[in-house]
Structure formats: structure tokens, C-alpha cells
Length: 392
Image (cartoon, rainbow, N blue to C red; front, top):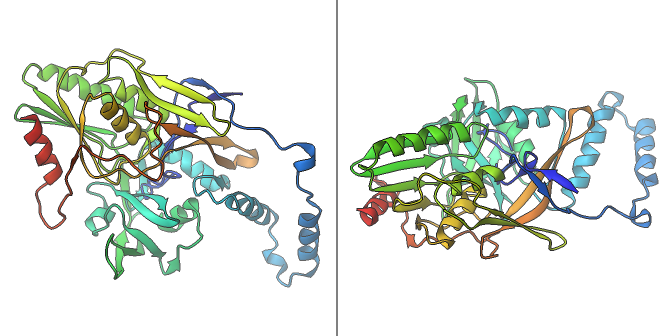
């Protein structure tokens, strides 16, 4: 079966940049990928749907509120239940409005609060707040559990449903009940929604160092990356090292992760993909990079997930860079986005990705070479300062 990396998503998220707000973590790529993703049900394994239609007819005949018998919503609800029964928070059915929203959110401009979501131990979790956005200003931190949205418990709600509850018109508010990591008491944050514009890449220069930050792997990443790399090249030979910041980067396109890693590596495997049948595909350095020689440190934290973990893991295992900061999120599965009838969509976990060595980081994350926790009580960026210290 031939798939296309434009449909392969890696992230942590049904990207929610609407929060951001859309579905993250997992993004698509841009090159063809040949892989066998699974067998279909045999005839004797297919479900007998007579019970479904029996319930459908009984509801139509007997349910008291005939106005509530909206056929499309009932059908979508039934499909959502079927998908949810698999127990995988990243495999989801999207009704037409949600599917369209996920596609629109890829352009990097949204109305929301500026957080990206995922699930950790079955809890709705803030993967990362976007820098300078309303959620961060309200004190929301990476790793926070979201217990309630406008008073509604988040237990058993899907990522698209969480997005829908948190999204809204600019200027309106949403109240989140959250729990910081290692805290016992929850807190409430009332956040005013705003326009969220999400750049992919930033570069700054400080002393002899280039501070290169990659926020996400999205539609505009390639163009923005080329511009940032060109700036670094123009500053040479003054630039003596690179601090590559992947903190709070929730992931994105698989092809983008290979593209970015290829900027720093001369050769070798970047990532492996393993299907349910154990079939493995390898993705290797695919272009000549411009930053293969400069010393570098990669910054990571618990908000670094999926595609950002691929890049960090590849650079670490090829001994191209040391990782500094905190252990990453641990998102090691790959989703495929499929368009269905009437504008609906289905995101299916089809494979796992592995580091070049074959190691899986799913639910475990990647450990840094230099473990440095950021102290939220100080204005200083301890992790960045450690990276500068190592390079200089």
C-alpha cells in the first residue's frame, strides 16, 4: 500500500494550536512512503450491524424528543464511539467542521488561547504554551493537567472536543481548571482568547552564538528555516556555535523532521518507522546541510514531542550535539489523516517511529546529556545559560 507523507502525522496532538488549536503533534510530510499498514477484516470478522440498526429504529420510534433525532449527529456519535473504543487518544474521528478546522489550523494563524494539548496517562495535558500568548501570560505551564473547561470535566473527552471547548471568538473568555505538576491543589485561569500567530523559526545572535529556535514543524517551516539558516551563514565566521532550541516544540511533519536533521548531519539514518506487522522503513539524511560543522547544543524539555524528538534523538545518537534541559514528552506514534465522505476525517495511528538505533521513546521520552531544570521562580533561563556555558 502506498502512502504519502503529506498524510502522515507525527505529533502529539490532533493539532491543537487553537489552542494553538488543531490536531500536533502529528503532521504530514511531503515525499512518498511505501509501507504496509495493516490487514483488513476478513468476512467472518466483520461485525453484525443488526444490533446497531435495531437500536437506531427503536430510538426513532420511541425516543420522546423527536427534535433530538438528528441523523448526522447520531451517526457521527456512533462512529466516534467505535473509534474511541480502541483506547488510543490519537486515533480520532473528525466530523466535517472539526476536520476542516484541523486543516485550516495548519496555516499557523488561529483564534484561541495559545496552548497545545496531548494526553499523558489518560489526562488532558498542556504540551506547551506558546510564547507570549494568552495562556502563557495567565500562568499556564507545560505539563499542566486540564481538569475542567468552563466547569466541564475533561474526563473521557477527545482532543477535538477539547479544542472545540477552548476555541472561540477573539475577545471572549474561557475558564480552565488546571493542576501544576507536583502540586496537590488545582487553580483556575480565566483566559481571554486572541489571534494566535505561530511562527515556525526564530534566530538571534548573541556574542559568538546563533540562538536558533524551532517552534513547530508546519506548512511554513521550510521557507522560514531557509531564511534563518541563511542569516547564520551570512554571520560566519563570527558564529562559533549554535544553540538549537526545541523546547515546547510539539512536533509536526515527518518530512520536516528529516529535512531539519539533514541540516546538521552529513549522512546516516534520521528515523525509523515500524508498522504493526513489524515492517521497518528508514529515513536518512536527504540533502547537503549548511550547518554540519558548527558546535551545537540542543535544548529540550517535556514540551518537546514527536518530530522534535526525532530531530533531537538523531542528533544525540549521531553524536552531533549534546542535549540539555529536561526529558522530552515521549510521543512515538505516527498517525495518518484520511478524508472521508461529507468532509469528515479519520486520524489513525498506523505505526511507531524509532530512533536511528531502533530504540522507541514512546511514553519514555529522551533523556538529556545535561539535565538542567528551569526554575520558574527566576527570570533567568537556566537551560539556555548552561548551553552557552558549554559552547563558550
